[in-house]
Length: 96
Image (tube, rainbow, N blue to C red; front, side):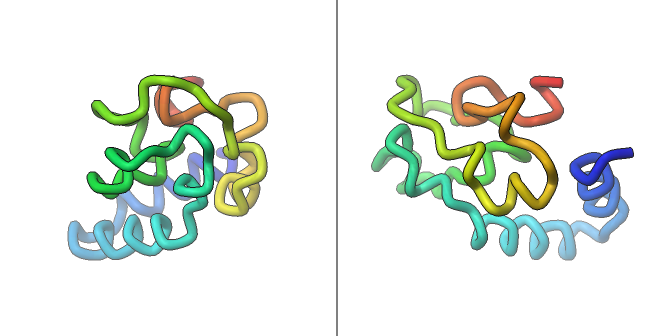
């Protein structure tokens, strides 16, 4: 099991309230909002953490850049280099 799979496993083992706290914490460390593809719609919808949550629901439709490979959160999980552009292509699990 790699680091990303371990994180998902650990979060799934948490209570629902702890899951929400963990996701909020991960969102706080997220750099999605610095990406050129991130837009006002995504900001208003608080869309972040695409590597875990999957692609943007309705907001991000055009790739204007990709910060996934440089994201400290993604790097800590050894993801974002092979699979990326999570906001358009879906989360890490979806792309695997």
